[in-house]
Image (cartoon, rainbow, N blue to C red; front, side, top):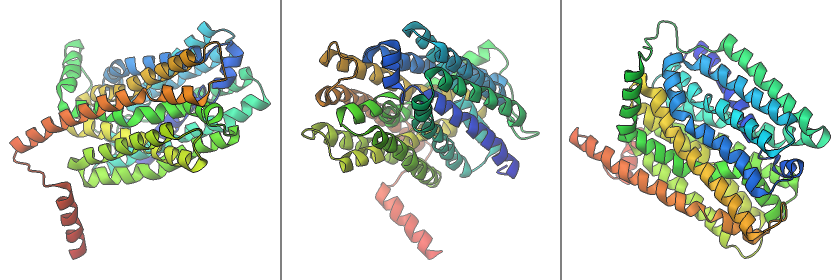
Length: 435
């Protein structure tokens, strides 16, 4: 375990995930072009992403079940091929229904990728390395968003819609070939028992759902992920350009900053989760609280916020992706390997269901406050639209608190007593100093 071959296998999976992120985010930076190409308003364009995310979220449990049965290589290769088909269809689409069908295919392929790569991490690595590599997977995979923010935008402006998305489809096919050639489900000789039949499948899903460790993972994923996802995938770029009046290059730079800061934060969170596995909820509350506070400042700022305030917002949102990965660490530590795919799928539903509902709500509020407009949404409309996030933060925080209490009751029943966080940190520092 933790061998060179483990890292080589992981790199193949990481590349597949990065390309999936690129395919997923390709419509976000092309939102304005999509409105012009399909003569659609905000609600119609948000529908593309809403259905994409709905398919992604809706397939998480079925994909988790299939993952436990067929393994990561088959699922990642199938996902890359499906996304390639979706991008090729989008390349030739000239109407809204065809474009919607294309994004549904992208969502379906995307659904097969991430949790399959996480299973590779769990089976190829051991010990405290697992949360660190998990964080690295989530963060380095976001390089695909950088590719969407810069190369894809340049391709759209210097080539054509058809050529750009045909190229994205070709990239998906290439990844599928690399996965078949280089990805392996588990180390040689590793005992990975396949799921036997439908009765066992149903029991695995039910047991994963009953587990409070799975549920706190779901609510952790929800409360930490959706705001950054909505911002990065669709509404951040229009908000910065049309609402805040930034130049397109500056807006693209802020989206890139979001990815870069996240890459720096992710490994740190992974190390903290590995060192303080019973204190992960403190990180969750810190990330959620900072996100709520930064959005509150931007939404209450009179008129357009200065650039430094938007930079702070983006830096805080950069912690959302790494923060959501803590949810998968909960699933890993509270579920056995034979139902890990099902549990991970359940966790992954949280943030993406919240994301698709917020994407839809933002589009609906924008259209309601700017009737008859397609690209002239004002700052007031954007502020009202982004205020819908507070409902979802409340739901997520209540869920985390509820299931954290249940897990701590179980630990107390096993004789594990948690000291106050400050006391535990001081004790850890003192032990380190004595060494």
